Length: 312
Image (tube, rainbow, N blue to C red; front, top):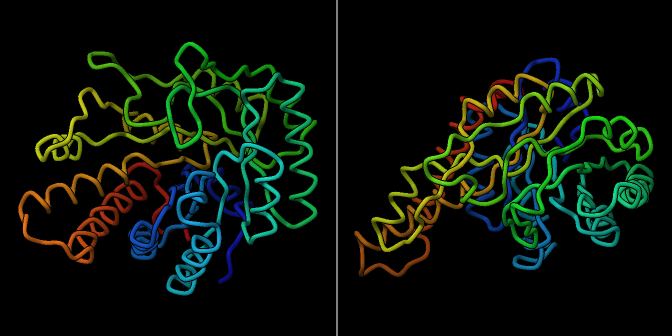
């Protein structure tokens, strides 16, 4: 099947009590690992491209990689999504360039300005058959060009969500309930806890409306330890507990973004490979096990965290 929007995915996820996995892609091995996992467990999928990924790999290369994945996985629905689009021009470029979904992230702007920017993107996207994700509330942490200090982060205000969605016409809404970008989400010794009270209030005010969680990597400690054991230096990298993400997926959350976990799996595997095979230099030899690690990571997420296996 061709690339799809997230509309039907989210309808089924909302009523089914699961979430769609949204995975950021940068190169061929990451695309292959993610899509092979989804194909094996028959799960719908969102492949995301950030502004940084477009700058790194080039828009055309990334789109063609995703189109190749669609050919190789003809029986699973795949959406191509712009993650954290910073402005109208970037969103327009992706809409014109074959994306089926875009995110406009004007969450750092004042409420009324966020509405106006989002409305502009929604109008253009809907005219071209593309859906739009917007954001209210600001997550702390670092992801590509998105950098927000803990002091500048803020939870989503539930009393604003209905007005925002009605005025903008956005198709899904990313909210801030305690997740954070990057691998260093929580300090060692703290107990990570998402604000389910905020999520529940948002759900009451926006019944049957798809909610999105960003910054939802769990930072698996086995890969942190693998990196540190093979020359890395990642002290205190802690993520969101998977049981809390599973609970969110059973509520109004229809899309969960997972990024750092895949990078950790890839980096840890490559570091370990070179430590064990210092004489090797062929990229195919060290990227093959890295691709396999990503595949197994994604399968685990699709089945045990998102609950979307068998839902394609």
